[in-house]
Image (tube, rainbow over all chains, first blue to last red; front, side, top):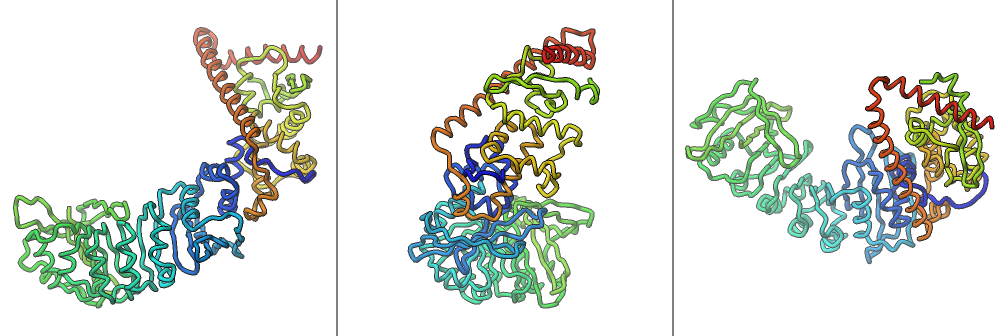
Length: 339
Length: 203
């Protein structure tokens, strides 16, 4: 095959051969190949690129992150879309920590907008939408309206407000972008009154603050009023008494939507069981007792060993909840599962 | 079953698109899953017609099969770096047109090892190239080429269907021969075929 310089009729080859060839190409080449024609695009899609998720990160440029399945031990591939003011993509870069150098290319003759690119990527990856939309301080410059248009009609599984995302930006984005889950990793958001807005929005689940974040003030009243189904937050202002009051509110039937609450109290203080369960009828379960709780946010099951069961005061309401306390390095984690 | 030693001596006649015929050993031919499905147990009267491919291409494909007769069973794609000197020479001495013809024929004959090596070779050729660079290497198919390809795919599907029907028919017939154990039946059919093609090639 070294002889002759005839061009390769790749896409005229039998489908099984094309599939085998594309399957042996690395993801970056598969993406470049998919841009050749609609036929090439369909051929790449039929192979099924080995990515577990497609994330969008608005940072240096409009970026895609193709995350390989965990078992592959491959670093994510980040596709950067450098664009003009008119949203036309002028240059595309592909980077991965697995590669020595970034693969870059100027794609001036494709006339693709950011939206075209998003649709192209979701098509070849056979993804219904975007797994995670990560907002940063720089995405504020991109503009909320442009972002909305770019991801219009695409399902977004999760939105993450990263460390540099401001409260102002979050406030602008939240009403425009529909997503069931939100991760708040920005102290800038947590320090503003945006947190209340997030809590009152119709999110299915909210995760607030990673391990490095300071404890935030999410009040008991705010939790009670929230429409959220699952809340995982670090709240250093919560103590045993506050938890006791919250449980009483739930028992009285004043908390309707919250089915999973996980609160990390990181002040180094261990909980006082007597104070938490004060005047609260309950039943202790042996550690061998196992309850399976389906977690909607991560589509996975949480296995609960033992715990303490409380029931609603209204005997006609058969809802009950399991309470768990776990001693952790920073202090205590309180969890409540309504079953 | 025929032993490996004796099967290598069995010759089959292959007919190319030009109408020419040439010998291929049974051991080499059995690397083709298409042959195994279509002719091994069903039999063929006269030369085996692979008339969609020219003589040069078929000879090249079976040259590869003859060479790899004694290699261990195929167990998935092999990296080009692991190819032997003979394999490398085999690929390097082909021009691009012949290479493409070989892929097409190898794919039709379903010779896994050869098809896989050819595919890996193309994937390697495209490695590290971006879209602009790929455009210089790959020609996009014309409507006529796509139509021709569609016809080939349809022909292949029809052949596969015919094979499945014939196999089912044969299985039905086999069921009626209750006295003969399956192994013995296969052996008898093979012996018949072997004699037929040996005598044919001696003519």
